[in-house]
Every structure is written in C-alpha cells, then in structure tokens.
Amino acid sequence: MCQKESDNYREGKLSGDLRIQVESHLQQCIECAGIYSIELLADSIINQEKEVSPAKDLTDRIMDRIESLEERGNVISNPFIRILQPALIISSVAAAIFFGVMIGNIYKPAGTVYSRPVELSLIDDAAIESVNMLSNE
Image (cartoon, rainbow, N blue to C red):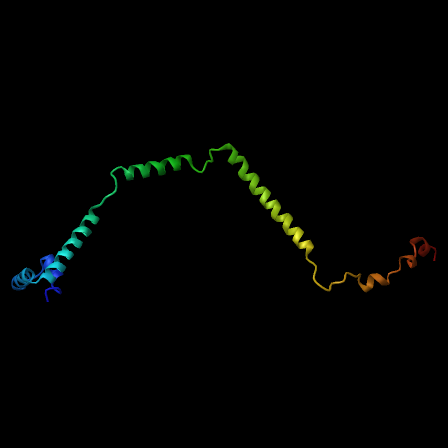
C-alpha cells in the first residue's frame, strides 16, 4: 500500500491518517524507504531539467541572423558562382537533349526491315509522260 500511495504522498495529496501511516511505514521498512528516496531523486532531476533555459541572447542572435538573411535576399555574393550557375544549367539541359536524341536513334526494334511501300515500287518514273507529250494529243 505504501508503494501505491508514494506518488500521492510526495505530492501531499494524502489525508492525515493515511499520511501518518505511510510516514511510519517508511521509517520502519528499508525497501520502501529506498524506493521512496529514488523517486525523490528522480523528481528532483526532472525538476532541474525543466528549469534549464537557453542563453539570454540566443533569441536576439537568431533574429539578427534571420534579418540579415532577409536583407541580403537570395543574392549570390560570389561572382564566379553567379556566372557558373546558369552555364551549368544550360549545359545540363543541352546534354540531356543530346543524349535523349542519341539514345532515340540507337534503338531499332528487332526484326524490322526497312522497305519501301508497294505503292512506291509500282511507280515507274521512266514511263511517266511529260507534259509536252500530253499537250500534243
């Protein structure tokens, strides 16, 4: 019962009689007293951790950094990078198009024989009459 009520005892929520019983039990029982002291130590560590606060000027430093970044905007300060960045983008796009065309030209489906359509093979250019010949008739 003492171990069940130890949380309420530490928080001061026990009634008078029950509080007195728990106190007298803690004085007599070494095991419950050890558990109670460990719980008190854990509570004190937790309370210390809650009290940790950031450095006083941390917020000011963060806000100053944000404001300086906003003032600069997205301006790239190095002139080499300002010239190199668009050149790299253009060359990447050109290389992608070039390799896409090359890969498209390499692919040939298996078994495809390139032949001319039947209609074109039936045309005999030598037999086509000239316009002059038709005008004489």
